[in-house]
Image (cartoon, rainbow, N blue to C red; front, side, top):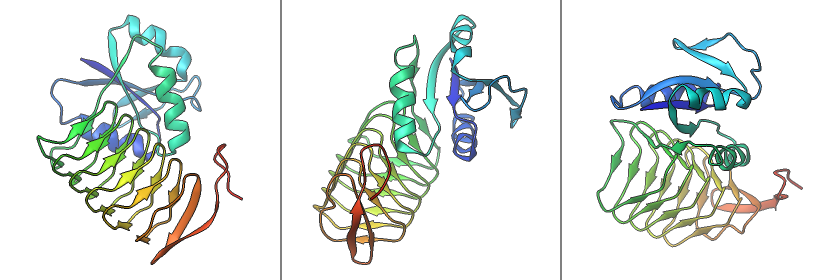
Length: 217
C-alpha cells in the first residue's frame, strides 16, 4: 500500500521513521502546503509540494494518508480535508509501542516509540500519543488530541477533542480535560480542566481562556 505524509517538519520525520517499520506500507512522498513547487527530499523521500498534487498522487496509486503536524487545529483541518479525497487514514505504530488487545483505536493516529495504551483505553482519530506517553486503563483520548512525550495519564481520565497535554505532564485518575484545552509542560493535574482553557503548574491551575480560533486571552 502506498501512503503520503502530510507535513514536512520534525514530527513528519518521526512519523516516517515509524512507518518505515511497516512492511505493508511504502511512503511515496511528503505533502506540505508551505512547500509549493519544492524539490526537497526528507530522508530520501521527496517533498512533492502542496495539496494540489494529491489528485495526481492518487492516480499513481496512493491510497493512504497520515497527518504529521503537531498543532492540533491544523492537524484537524488537514484530516477533515483529506478524508474528502479517495484516501484512507492509517495509524503509525512504532514497534516498541505497547497497545493492549482490549484497547480501541481510531484511524490516522500516531503511537510513538515506547508509548503505552492500556486495558480498555480508547484512542480516537488523528491523535498523537507521543514518545514514552502512558494512557492508562479505561481512559478515553478523543479525536485530534495530542499527548506529549513522557506524559502519564492515569485510569478513567477523559481527554477531550483537540486537547493538548504538554511534555512530562501527570494527570490523576478520573480527571476530565475539556475539548480544546491546553495543559502546560510538566503539570500535575489533580482536578478537571475546562474546555478551551490553558492550565499549568503543580498542581495545575487554569491560567486563562483559549479562544476557539486557537489564540489565548
